[in-house]
Length: 252
Length: 209
View 1: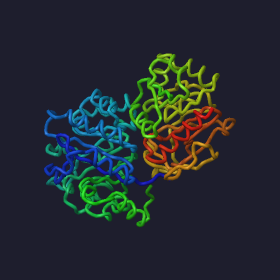
View 2: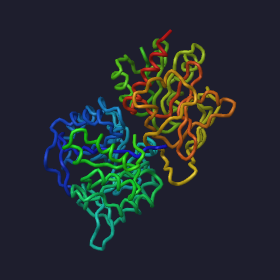
View 3: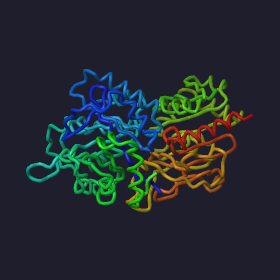
View 4: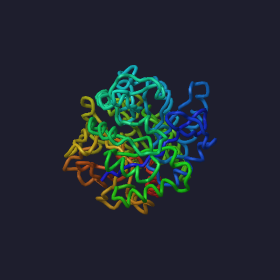
């Protein structure tokens, strides 16, 4: 049987791992991101996601160096996202060693971009990353440009469209829950999981191992991701896995 | 020396890094004539079957692979697309001819219920059908990373080549083996310790004689 996946997310700004709270990226956690990957390699993670949240592309080369360094050391799948606006950029990241590439803002601005990527690289390579925020009407709405620009798109509907256009996976983040330590936005995850047939990775809000269990059992996610929580505990991902296994989840 | 075939499909980097991690020298092969120089051939690849076969054919790899692997029996390990190419044809986006070394057709995964999502992405347990040396002493057990939407449906007359399967709402051929020819649907280069063990086993087997 297919295992449920545990995925640490490394949020990178100007070449350093930073903390993300409500989509603000301030504290530097590791200056040398490769150290984090060394840990994760030993700690039996199932995949790694790396996202560039830099405000501009001035220091993009530093991000490439990070991706390059990761891919040489990381013997689990590596998904890379942030600032991907062309198939050339996607090719560049794949050549640097990414296995999958996450697209977000450009996919909303130009939905045919999803299909272009999928046609060239295959659906399995294309992760559509969605940042969702509950709007004043109480509807979950897709936001782009690092969460700053609301789009009017309803999140579950957009996820469905992304699938139809060729996405192989959805990486779903809740802006309201990001860094708030109250657990995943389970209603949102459930809605998106029901709307699509492709795997959904849940992200945003994990503070305890129990939150990971909830994401899978109550949210129905295929994979659970988290960023900040993994950086401060020794053997964190191993402990998380042990907890999930005890809760009856089939993990590696 | 192990040769990794570069035919423009996806990243060879992770395959190279994996061999580096087990201290095995590799060389990337872009000119098919160089296949004669290596002791074993790795054909990795992700992406669409049709594009992949076209690239292989146009760069002249198909004939020489037939020569080196079928006639001279050089050890071959196909990963993901490299396994699917062994089939006679694929139904991914139309119909495309494969190498035809194994009787079978590549089809879209059609799970028995919607709870099994396609693409089949993630770690899955293998059911070992034949105790091949490549499955020996896997450090974390026979569990590997898969990412694919199509699988090789091996014809009944060739079912003896099926070395391992896994379950994803249907039975999926995870590994095949016939003589010097190996193919795996999963990604050993992305399957952490068990993956590195499997590559080590393949190398030991391939360089034995």
